[in-house]
Length: 181
Image 1 (tube, rainbow, N blue to C red):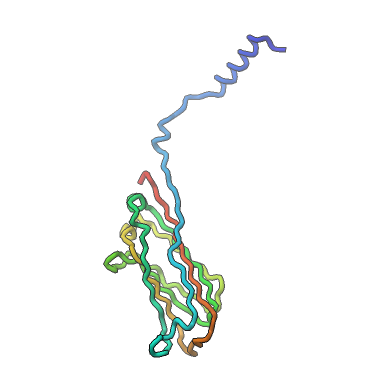
Image 2 (cartoon, rainbow, N blue to C red):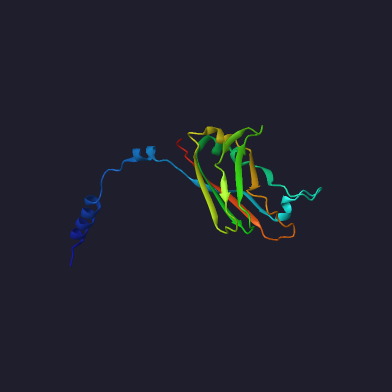
């Protein structure tokens, strides 16, 4: 077969024939861009929630404001570049609704307002997505609260307070950071 010297020659041939200089300067151009998905808001509303508990009269909207502490993290604040906002809605109620979603800072100033979201009656698989380029809208990083207003588009005929159908709202955000930004 092969002599010992012949074997050394073949091994050395393979080692040197498949090599080229390594360019470690490529590491300087490498950027780490992790993505994180966070849950924002979740709620279920039944028709009874649209009735004033004191008067028993149907109201045409419900508003809720929740804290949003995600941007308190300095890493996110300093390196955030984009946010994908996702909403999923299951509307079992036989009414059309409009949702207004607004991000607010600690003084209740608007940092971002999404386009109105219109959900048809009995739509069980509604989805809405919006991408925000934070480099073009840096005020988004000041968000500390989320305000959601759910409005009934046509209050007639009125809802039944004993109706058990639900309006379910789920939202999340995929946050993109760039450590080289």
